[in-house]
Amino acid sequence: MPYEPPTHAVERSLRATTGAKVIAGVDEVGRGAWAGPVTVCAAVTGLRRPPEGLTDSKLLTIKRRESLSEELLKWVTSHALGHASPEEIDDLGMTAALRLAAVRALEALPIRPDAVILDGKHDYLGSPWRVRTVIKGDQSCVAVAAASVIAKVQRDKMMAELGVDHADFGFAANAGYPSPVHKAALADRGPTPYHRLSWAYLDALPQWRHLKKARNGADGNVPEIEGQLGFDF
Picture 1 (cartoon, rainbow, N blue to C red):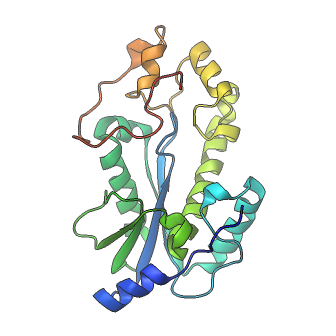
Picture 2: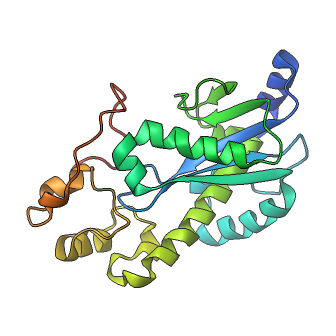
Picture 3: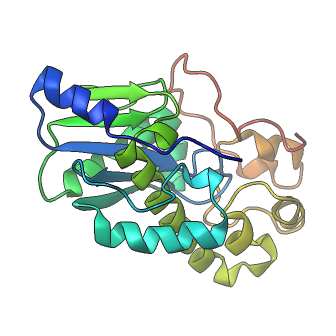
């Protein structure tokens, strides 16, 4: 399906209205997974023409996404990844874990950004970062699209490595998301050390329900995110 390529429109607007010079695009991956970390990439691209075909990672085939990621790693001005572990997600709640991962990524950049373009409508970063949220920013903003692709490819590689000792779960194919193979292995073998143990899927697994951790409640009134529904959905 044809799609409009991302532009630098938001970045140009931030430069004009705030005087920001270094602007990072930020996107996350793994928020709805049942296992593995949530991963955030911060990418600084400037106003240069991006590689051909850049868009939201979810709109790309695996082969194209991996190829494009290799191009982007050479093309971006700078980038950094931040992760929040399953234990941190359980302890802090997802919103706080996202912020932790994003701050880790932003603070790992060689130069602190003057402003951040954050994918989505919710600002989970907050002060002291100067944030512009953009719905579907991973499709419309060059820096966010670049962050989207890099984050997805790098986390997929990480999950494949974590899955070597847990082959029945199919992490190399599902990246910790609830595929049929993942669900079947979970019901049979129980959670691995990489699973999020505060999540609702354990409610449907009586033999493993005793492993469930109480949710921290740090998310307050933030709505449930995708992936925290029941085992059958």
